[in-house]
Image (cartoon, rainbow, N blue to C red; front, top):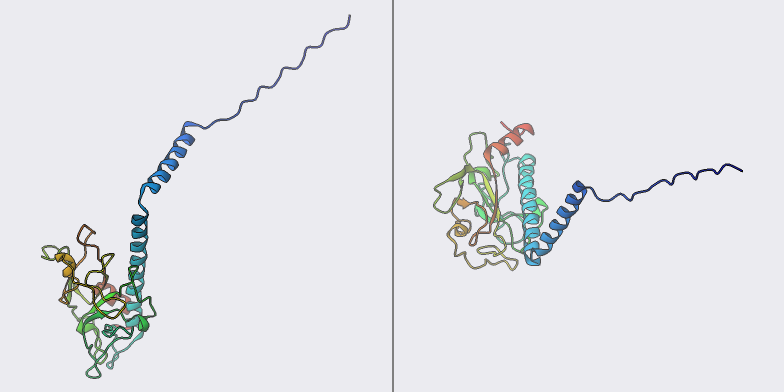
Length: 235
């Protein structure tokens, strides 16, 4: 009688499921997607608009630094551009003695090769100190800026002082902004926003709240002088 051969044992196979760590990652991704969908479309658009405007404000500051590094006044010293006061994108400068027709207005976007409007279709406001914007007598290491950046309109807390130049967007509400038609929007009702539109030397930079949505940047004197020393334009 022939020996009966035993059948080879079958190999058991198991389908691999999610580990606890992988499952936690999946749940986190789903939660993030749900949270993103819960943000209203208008809020998402506002976030993107603010991010785009902040990016352009950074480009404007770099363009102003580049302008100072590439332009020499009558005495060979650097200077910053004047504001545009007639909405043509070109700085408005007095013929003599080289000063600006106004120290505050729109950013001269044509001279700087920049976008003319913020994300809410208003012009960027630009204020420059007289000591830094004279094309006959440029600025030096001892020049002192005019502007002060404060945490609120009372200026109980000073963020920066002796600032050569300030650039800002009046934000989503556009209160006090130079508009596309060449005019000016109605003045702000918020005291902190009013400080950025009243033409004086005090500006406010703070976290947006129910009354304040301006985006503000400025050129610190140390950044300006260090950049120009590096470029060989100062002292």
